[in-house]
Image 1 (spheres, rainbow, N blue to C red):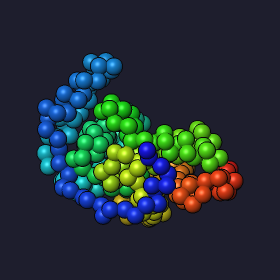
Image 2 (tube, rainbow, N blue to C red):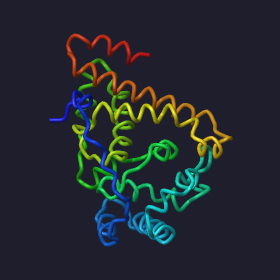
Image 3 (cartoon, one colour):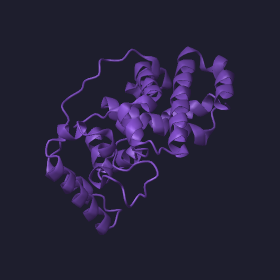
Length: 241
């Protein structure tokens, strides 16, 4: 069973493979199998996917594009009119690639895009990363349930896409430390700074929330590994800050 104690275990070296597209028939079948959505929506997903593959037949080339183009929609832009729609409209496909082991993703991109519905995509694929196990353990340590759910979903989504994981039991303390460091460095990223000079308050709020989220994740995992019963009160105090 997955445990927050696993978050402080020794990590295996990250295995980064060359990012690649999955076979077209595989993704088409996966989308067509989502029969809970209307046909118009599914057809649009496939159209956006094909536009993306036409623009970047070699997925590795997409990773070399400027961050602003890969992010697709800049802070403050209307959802319907992003600056770079080809990248913006295929986030579900990119998430699919991550969950299926075809690519891992960099933190600057995952921070820049804001919303990533990784858990929704995982559910469509029949994958349960075990995030709710971490939520329940955080609640047992004194965290508010809604806050814990939001925190764990935000953190786990990005850690799994960064490291090619599908189970929270494989997340380590080093993984958490890496994302915290990425959050700290992100505002100073040259691409980020140059492309978001009109950055609004919502961007700053998301950054602060991400840092608090991962700090809470690290604190709770460390407490759980030492002694949940004796340190629950300190976790409760931390969750109120």
